[in-house]
Image (tube, rainbow, N blue to C red; front, side, top):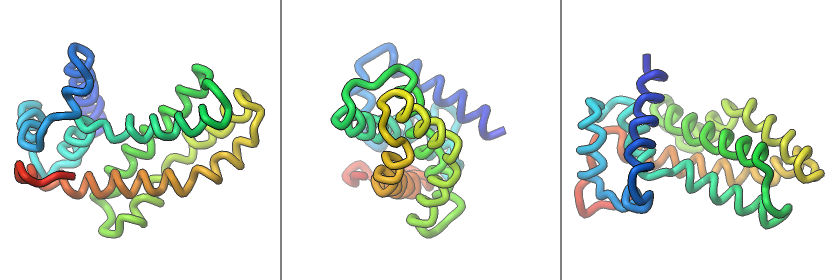
Length: 173
C-alpha cells in the first residue's frame, strides 16, 4: 500500500516541478513544504510524509549530482547507461535511508542498513563503471562507500527532522 502511494507522490511532485523552475521548489520554506504535502492528503507521522518533504528538497538529486561529478572528474563524461545506474543507486540509497530512519534510532546504523539494501543497484553501477570506463568498478565503489554512507546519514537526519510534522519557520535543516 505504501509503495504505490509513494510512487504516486513522486509522480505528482515531478509534475509540479516539470512545469516550472526547479530552483523554485528548492526555495520552499518549511510551512510551504508542509502545506504541499498535506494538500496531497499526507499527514505528519507517516513515512510518505517524510518522503514527500524530502522529495521537495531533492535530497537524492543533490547526492546523485555529487556522485556524478566525482565520476566525471575521474573518467570524463558518463554514458547514458552509467548515468541511469548512478541515478538508480542514488535514489535507492535516499529512499532506503528515509525508510530506515523510521525503523532505527541510530542514524549510522540506519545509513548502513540503507546501503546494504541497495546491493542490487550498487552491483549494476559497479558493472556499468567497469563497462563504460574500463576502471575497476569494485574499487570505485569501495572508494565511494564512505561518501555514500555520509549522504545516507544526512538523508536519515533530514527524514527524522521532518517526519513528525512541520518545523518552525525560523528553523532550517
